Image (tube, rainbow, N blue to C red; front, side, top):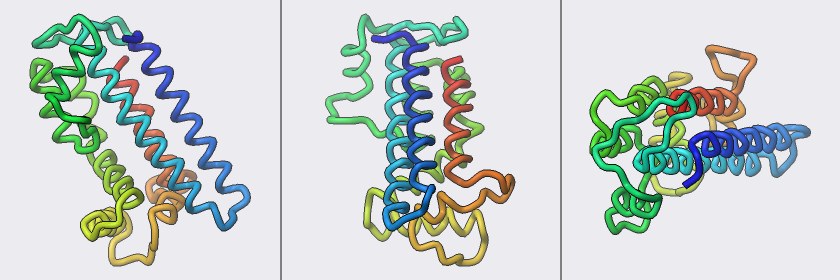
Length: 198
């Protein structure tokens, strides 16, 4: 099990690579820009999910945060495999996209009002939006399309003509017109990751 500082560094490196891929896809814009933007977003979200899992397992093994704070845990596991077994409960994978499920999972393993829940709560809206965008890219179901449209309506009102997630991710973020939604989400992940692991 790597140190939490390495987990954080690896995530921030992945995040930087995704930002670079995103910028590369935009200059110049071409017929593959939309696919590239969506690929950059999927890679960023996948790195986030891996970061959540890896840091959770590390804290279950007694690793300290980067700021040397300890995360109290109901169980201490001797290694990553034992921690993963507890979290997975014989499932092939664990879903790290829904904030409420993440919080419920953390509440099972870490005492209430823990630093993890405190760190992720302020980003709940953006993280749920990101999950909806991720699903709209990765799935063709009616439900994923409806949830994506709801994100668009919440941001812009009405029914703006945004045909695919890439068009939304490259749109200007209304609260800071110097940033796009992709930039905003990358910033949220960076800040939240630092809150989670110190």
